[in-house]
Amino acid sequence: MDEKSRTLMRRSLTLVSTKGEDNLVVKETVVPAVGEEDVMIDVKFCGLNFAEASMRQGLYAPMPPVPFVPGYECSGFVKEVGAAVKDIKTGDRVVALSDMGAWQDQLVLPQENCFVIPENMSLEDAAAIPVNYVTAAIMLFEQAVLKPGQSVFVHMAAGGVGTAVGQLCKTVPDVTVFGTASASKHEHCRAHGITCPIDYKTQDYAQVVKSSSFRGVDIMLDPVGGSDSSRSHSILKPLGKHIHYGGSSYVLGENLTFYGMYRALVNKLFSPTYDGFGLMDKNVMVGGLHVGKLVKDRANFSIVRRNMESLVELYQEGKIKPVIDSIYPFEEVKEAMARIYQRKNIGKILLRASPGSDGK
Image 1: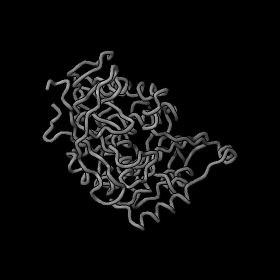
Image 2 (image 1 turned 90 degrees about the horizontal axis):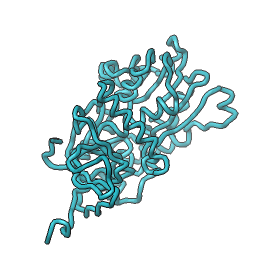
Image 3 (image 1 turned 60 degrees about the vertical axis):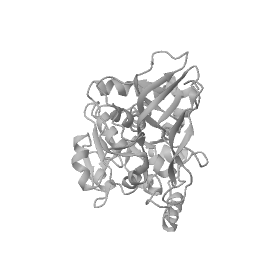
Image 4 (image 1 turned 135 degrees about the vertical axis):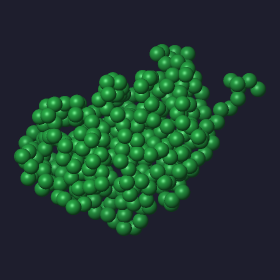
């Protein structure tokens, strides 16, 4: 049997259920054929986000029916390219975005989803950029249109998106960034562009902002959702913009307990509702962003692509650099997710696709 006729298999980290502690398992699946405009990646690292942690409990939308392979981003080496692929060749180091299914050690994607990375970018850093930094960049520069001298508020400021927001805000003159994080993470926050870290456990962040010289913020970046969003909305200045990009308040622990389901229901019931006249009265705007849906939307993928290309340039210029919290093999995804559920991570958590892979 020659190489072309041999069935190629891959390790796929698969969500088999939205219940129980051991519902993510490594399975062997068949690698699909490489189409004319496709690229096959020998994956080394994958990004782990709050989105996938929510999927594990069935608290994320949209998500496919189980079983399925989660994952929106990865980095690795190009193993094979289709006949019509341009500008990417076998052996190139790439970072890629997928609308789902990135948690595999061999991944086939359209060439449009793949980006050749510069020599000074490690594969670890590459895997940590797409979801967090593209989310932050679109919110700040395309939706909110951040201007010099403005103020920004971001919840979970020490996480992957929060770190990206702080670093990107530093590329615009005189921007003040408020951000919530536990006190032990404040040093990290200040080092990465968060001007005013706020300990959400001991301080009322709304009162801190209202008591500051700003009296409110121009841009509210909200990954929390639920009932807390009303308080976030209350600190907008006139012409302020409130952008939703997650719902961390619905995920309260590693396992979805009855209490957790009750809290999720309460959060849903007391989530803010917006109507045109109410927004007119306050002179504010409300929006939302789901990068995963943009990746899937082929007609508008150019939005993702131009932001990703811009971020690669910023990395080359030394203006952004992901902070890697930790790296876990596929088999330890449960432990990796525990850090997210317990809000322990500072920066990005990665998954190692291949046993012993060092990304080289």
